[in-house]
Length: 317
Ligand SMILES: Cc1cc2nc3c(=O)[nH]c(=O)nc-3n(C[C@H](O)[C@H](O)[C@H](O)COP(=O)(O)O)c2cc1C
Image 1 (tube, rainbow, N blue to C red):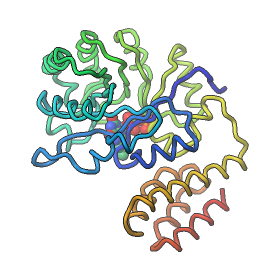
Image 2 (cartoon, protein in one colour):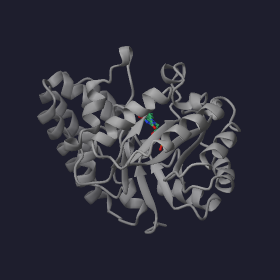
Image 3 (cartoon, protein in one colour):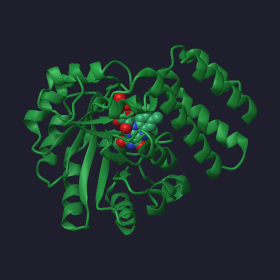
């Protein structure tokens, strides 16, 4: 059963939902109410990667709603990154309290914040005292290793005026294994005063129905991998039905536009093929034989072979 009243957010996936992808997505399938930009953070030697900066430049983010995100280890990093985004004209900024990768958490970033509610409280106090001309939201997991850690964080978040809290009910140590736990989300609904957005493992209409059974009042959903596997998913969940032949045609158009856009932007077949390989690592899952599709893409050593592989894959869909 499709839901016309729901809102869908596109989750940020570093390396996947880049500005080219977001633009093509919004011009083709759409159905997304907010597109979250993968995090902006400091790398080695307090430098921000050019690729991350390009993601937030206003000229790369067109006429659809985008929300940038910051990944930070302390108030200095947070203030600097927020300053950059405010300078770009953003009025809403998302704080990443969920990145599970040791590369981030070892530096006190992302999900590491879930184990330091008192420090988070101090940092948020400073942030809100500074009166940046922007609203803030949070994206978080349930804990580093203990899924009850979120409770102390919720208490802290309740002290501030946040736009919303996106909750992915898994611990960082789970990474992406097992299933997100909707029961933790149901508990969060009782504890958090801010609007809550559900995130985790929503891949199909039946997943939404199952989640709605457990969370009947919930109507804002963030989807990551599900939209990479099936770019039509947001529109489908909102009731836009397409019969299989029309859907196949639209998927092909989406693919072709993405390829054309990366070809315009990137230098050389090697880079373009690398980007398309990455895209297919999820997109292939919407085909009957994902393994075969991926194999065909992987062994394409030049554009000619790649284009032939794509024709063959779509013929089988
Ligand atoms: C490759 C990859 C990159 C990600 N990059 C980010 C990121 O930059 N910021 C963030 O908040 N979450 C990031 N995530 C997490 C997703 O936004 C999302 O929370 C997660 O995939 C669960 O949602 P899903 O089950 O709908 O995919 C990333 C996940 C993956 C797999």
